[in-house]
Length: 165
Ligand SMILES: [Zn+2]
Image (cartoon, protein in one colour):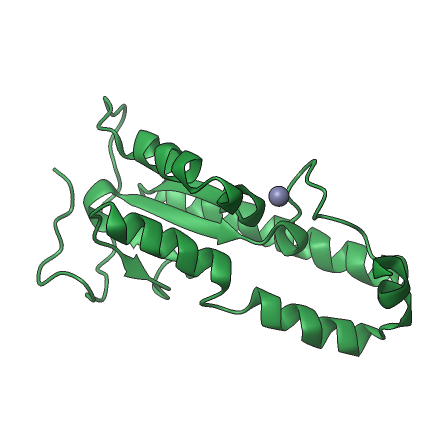
């Protein structure tokens, strides 16, 4: 059934279908946001001034959370990250670009002094584990080396940025 659908959809149709899944404010992203919100965290969303327009930014913790769809961002070893049966070359190139962009954004963000956490959409089956993963990253740790100054961010949730000192 699924294989049939994959074969009969044209690239344009499939692209359109997938872009709906890919768009901002997707289910997985909203789920992570409400998870963090319920746990009492303040954050900003879709911060365009930062590389990759991060989905969730926790300025106080200098931490960024990306919520990645397993199909588009190629979650390694995940059964959702399938390869369509037709137009393999097209999809291979598209996926390669997505993965390369993600890596570049993470690199840039780390260079700017941000910690980056990636949450995969398939992990949303276990919200408690996701929260644990993020909170583990937020724990204060001994910092080595100098942190680059933070870029000024547009404020949404807080009146003043509390850049964790
Ligand atoms: Zn996955």
